[in-house]
Image 1 (cartoon, rainbow, N blue to C red):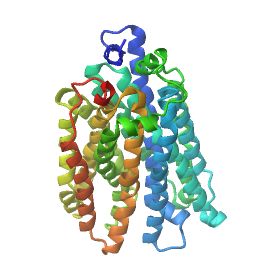
Image 2: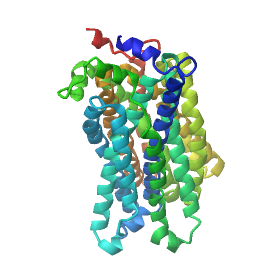
Image 3: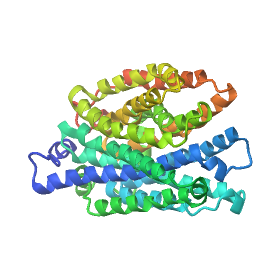
Image 4: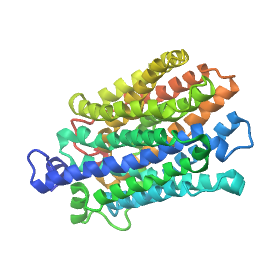
Length: 450
């Protein structure tokens, strides 16, 4: 049996056996809730960076410098993501997708919980921000293989004509994680300021343990993808396999495609989710309690948009829908800031909601099936993980830091930020124009046939 036939016949929810249907759904839920945990971890940290970490961990500096320092620590997590991708991808392509999904789940959950245990600067001095950076590194190291594992597992389990729909559920989970993080911050901000700064913020990070347990309950019963099982049965996978080297050798072109297609979308995603919060507070003097509320609204819209864009990519093509997303985001920055700087809360909310719909989840709703379809099965995990996570360092990892520095350097002007957003999205738009369509092909890279 070829790889093609395995993928085409695996897990058809309408015509398959009850166990196949159940496994497709379980894979979807496993990807959804795992990515929800990842995004929850990142959103509660990013929100904390915008509204409180500058005073708790970097109190003896100018507020603007404190925000830069907090976002610098935030960027460390993104720097760790490709390292985690490198480490876990070889096991994902050698030991299986499920093994990595369980390992990364616990690493992220423990690191996030540990942040709630950290001493403040007043209690431990420089050790406090150092430990914060260490926890943030471990968060990113685990997250570096999380989303890749989820989308690869679902793409290899779902039927050919519905990969976009099912794989997009991974990023519905991301939006759900954002919404959950926003709800928790809304509740905690109801506390008196003294209580919030003393122990309230810790409760936010402790809460991640519940998401971790829920994800594990689902993932422990998860079956391996049929494509990977077939490769194991045929003896095509061995201990000496080198997925990272294989993808660099055989899939280099698509590795670069994934990198450049994701870098702009990833940057925009975290600018709308993280940077705009600090910009609204520091430059427009918007009440900090408004930030989690508008993030919640944006995340609820994003839950729908990820699924909608995934479905549309099944119908109209991955490349076509990704062109719609990247073109909109390329043109959006200037109108977005013109609306934001009116100070009108409705218009600000509209901008953030559109940012969530297109950048935070619309783009990844298409990526979920698009990126795995670019790579062959023996190095698919490595290709998706390395392409996405290295681009996340230069995208979402440094984008909030760069934009905060631009605002500080140009006396609060938004123009350099808008130019930066258009420039980095232009890279993704141009790469998408030059990329192939995959929706009508099976999960097989052309180089595999050579």
